[in-house]
Length: 390
Ligand SMILES: NC(=O)c1ccc[n+]([C@@H]2O[C@H](COP(=O)([O-])OP(=O)(O)OC[C@H]3O[C@@H](n4cnc5c(N)ncnc54)[C@H](OP(=O)(O)O)[C@@H]3O)[C@@H](O)[C@H]2O)c1
Image 1 (cartoon, rainbow, N blue to C red):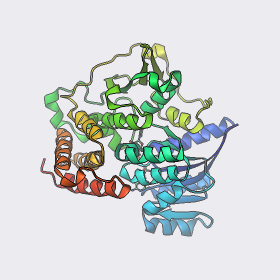
Image 2: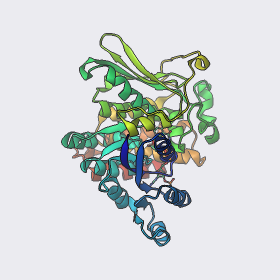
Image 3: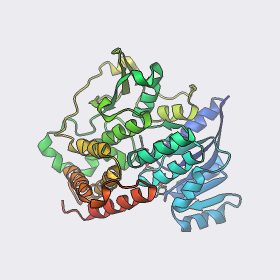
Image 4: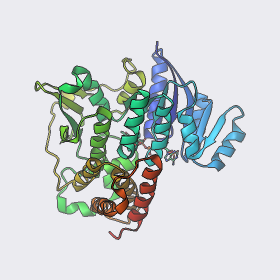
């Protein structure tokens, strides 16, 4: 029987709520998963429901005011707040597994804290690897720690990697659905609305990642994430458009064999694999019917349709704080698009401009990479992206 004590950072979000659903299923299937800690940003009503249901020992919230009101409501609960609270929760004692389901750069410090204190990390927060890949892998090596990726593509790669040795990998192939605008005429892209961009054909996800899937920034982030998670050079990681999202990614070996993972498009499947790794448990999650799928297709990723992909991968290859700059800029530009301030195609234009300005800064050569330095560039890029005249 699997027996694990678990902390979930970002329990009120899309991945966080699905993780709690999986935990209930696992416990129904005879496992013993104990929820020790939860964290929310501002959705305190949902956090209260989660506290009442899962009875954690400790929670963390973004605002101190919310922490005070929770403290008054639940006598025996330890309530933390702010980024300091997230870091404390990430290395809370007597915990087997920390799930990082936060969105954005705020996820990096807790990732570093969890790994530094020897916790196994189930990682959905891709920004941790995108902006902090070098730091995260350094700590991972020092502490001989483990990251179990929740992102469906990396979870599929992890599963496919069991079929061969690291030196036998020829290439990693990351699938991309193409998002809602795969077949939209390119000259119409500047006029698409936020509502259209938020309508992902296959997955139901948080707002930012849905827009990032439409621009293909998300796929570029996944390339960077795969580079660090699996220690594979960029030239061996390739995207391919696969509109059905049935194959979640593939690994090709030197003998020409390609190993893929296929499953229903339901994030609870990779979430569960990361919670029970290396076991498998039957929990009645949706199944894939090959007869219903009937047809799998693949296309080359069109760089004219998705210009942001090349910009973000170039930032990954450049290394240092380049990825912190493009990630922060993307967060701001996506918000500006959702508010109707800029058109859809301006997200890619803005990203290229911020990457160019980052290259133009004298202080980025030979910089000493640290969390403080990453957050400094993050702040700079946010300011720049907010005032770009697009
Ligand atoms: N959703 C998916 O299917 C999916 C798939 C693959 C990878 N991912 C990755 O998983 C991560 C989470 O995505 P998501 O879609 O679950 O995002 P989401 O629905 O927006 O949830 C984000 C969570 O982080 C919390 N949060 C946000 N800002 C915070 C802050 N400043 N301080 C403390 N907590 C904060 C939110 O709290 P409140 O809601 O309470 O404010 C919420 O619990 C992202 O990195 C995403 O790229 C997601």
